[in-house]
Image 1: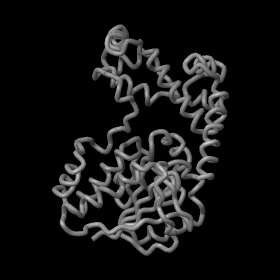
Image 2 (image 1 turned 135 degrees about the vertical axis):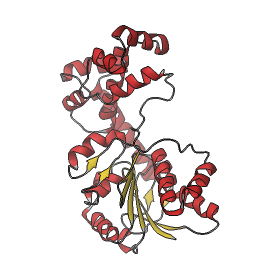
Image 3 (image 1 turned 90 degrees about the horizontal axis):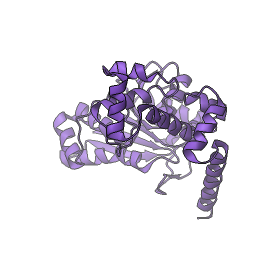
Image 4 (image 1 turned 45 degrees about the vertical axis):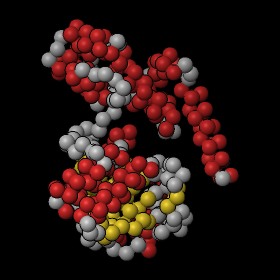
Length: 323
C-alpha cells in the first residue's frame, strides 16, 4: 500500500484536486483492497479554500509523517505560498518519499524548494516561459505530464489524471490503470510528451489548420512569417490561406494575431507585468502597436481592462471575507 500525502495550497482548482485524489479512490475500489492510503496536508495551521469554496481542514505539513508518495496540488499564486517554512517541510518529506508529484502550480512549489533541480518537469502552459527562466536547473518541457523518475509533474487537471493513471500502472499494473480509466470513461491514448493543448475546442480545424495553429502557439513572442509556416507544412502560402478561409472563415494572419492578442489579454488580466513587457511577450515591436491592436480587438485599453479586473477581484475578495 502506498502511503500518500496530498499537500493542497490555497486557491487550488477543484478539478486539479479531484484529479489527484479520485484515481486513488477508484484504484482502491477496483483492486478490492487499499493500494493507496492518503491524507491531506495544508501549508499552515489555517484551513485551505479551493476555488469552488470547498474547504480542506488545516493539517500542517510540518507535522506530516513520512510517506511513499507526496503530491503537491496548487493553483493560483503558488510563488507567494512557497514560504521558506513550507519548502523546508517539503524537503524533509521528499528525502524518504519514493515519488514527489506536482499538479498545475505544484511544480512551482517543488522547484522553489529545490526538489526539481536536475530533473525534467512541466507546469501549466501559461507559466512555462516564466518557469523556464526562473528555474534554470530544471529541464522544462512543454508536455502534458513528465515522468522523471522520483519526480512527476503535470500541466493541469486533465494531464494530472493521465499522470495518476501512469503512476497506478507503474506500481500496480496496467490492468488496474485501465479499469480506473474506464470508470471515468477516460481515453488514455494520449502520449505524455504531447504538447499541452491550448486551442478552443469549438474551432473546427482541419489537420493542416490545426498544425498551423500549433506552430503559431509556439511562436507568440517571436512571430514567424506566414510563408515559413506554410513551408513547414509543405503548402504554398495561397493553399494555407485557402484552408483557413474555407474552414475557419478567416485568414491565417488574422488567426495568428488573435492568438497573440489572447495571450496579451491573459498577461494583462492575470499578471502585473508592465504593459511594455506584455507587448514584447505577445510579439509586438512596441507598446503602441500592441495598444492599438488590443483596443481594436477588445474595445478597451489594456490599462482600463486591468483596472476593471483588479476592482472585480477586490470586490470578490471583500465578499468572501464577509461570508
